[in-house]
Length: 610
Image 1 (cartoon, rainbow, N blue to C red):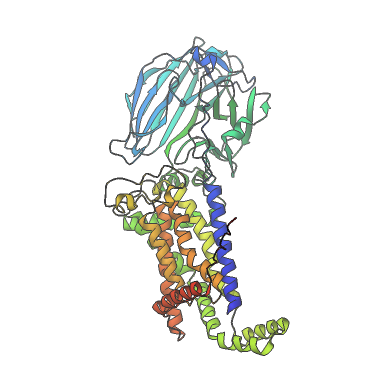
Image 2 (cartoon, rainbow, N blue to C red):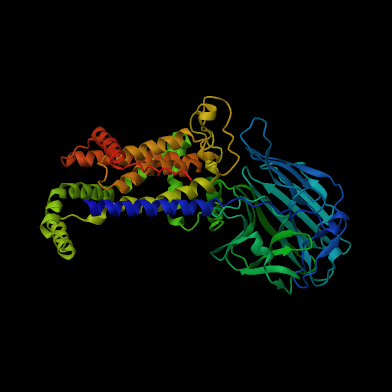
């Protein structure tokens, strides 16, 4: 039995070290933010360079400052904003159903911002001139379009813009939006001239300055793209490290696709993505303009040769909104955007995180409370692993039954360690006991724990999701503490530093410690004093370590501990070993008291007089 206790001790120490290591990886000390949004000299002079690089020359079109221009209102159930007729830019967009914080009167989340404001974030669509055309012959970033029809962009209420050049070409743009977050931009060119011309459509997302990042390993922030079934995530610092592409004239990465794909920028919970017509060849371009500190993503369908009197049309979709699982899944399954659900950062354990969240989302839809859904998910996961857990608990119970025989073996073999090992292995074989089976619950728990951590942290459905009482955001740590009488008073603990959560510990972490402590008391304390001390402290160490985790994860851990406690109790009882919890608690206190009495207190020697 002593050997088994040693194994449990080692496993517990390894698990503790793993959790601590992951904690420091996921939550490194915050570094002072670097201001990368200071305007360049050109920006201070008011110059705006539209990043509509020519597909053949790669030259950027230098244009004048963006003047004030008429705007069209965007009004949908989830989106609000405006479209500038200067360039037909979608550059002013807010998410109506999401707030920056939970404070009353908090502003709605703003996704896109026009040029001239801090951290400009905008989109452009148009045509790149080819054979037979000059740059001024195609609508660019500074072209002022004319409103032909519509006034407010809303679901089932598109707007149409037009512009004509001096060579007989007429450009028409129809912008539509659905009830969620998908825009469709359909550009049509009619060649009314007598000559054949060549031109290429494009869609572009520009992000000026480095946005405020979470800077946490578990979530990807930066460019995200899929091309012909291959998903790629690129951090902002990796964009700046691209080699200069001779065609683009900037640090860039050009990807050719033939069947499917999309490209854009993703934040923790929000995303802008360009989706060209699927099933047709096109190019994706990610690049960085160091002179303007601007990150760029664009799609370029194939160039077209347009004969006199002919017409051509190009449609590019723009997703601009929240990364809601159900919405993005519908765009993938019903809208035909292959792999779009992978725009949510499921991580290395995607084979666990995807199905776990699917079940969690279904339970939340069924119950209507995300905290209760997490509890329901815990029961579901425990049910799935019940056969393995049952074998583990039965094996542990049988190990306890073998304790008298093992003690007899030790007395019989004396100091002969090899003989003791052989006879112990034979005893295990005869009694059909697997001593390693006790490790299974821990080994199963680790990947599930980290997969659920990923799900809770990256999915927007957990953001600001309430449970009960003071628990109004399951993606944030428990805000209760002695400071606010554990949630009874209407203010949060002043947790402003990385270690203050050790002082202002909340209700959920305390419950976590208690459930771990009770789970320990199902068994008598180990006989070794060192092991006694380590096991005695372990629940409270975990209580403080996990106190800063998302409260949804702590709810899962408490529920898991409670279910495990009941399972172990019932299995031990069914094998004739009814746990004496209160007896184990009294015995542990008595052993602790005896250890204090047995340990002499060193008395410092008296100092002699000089």
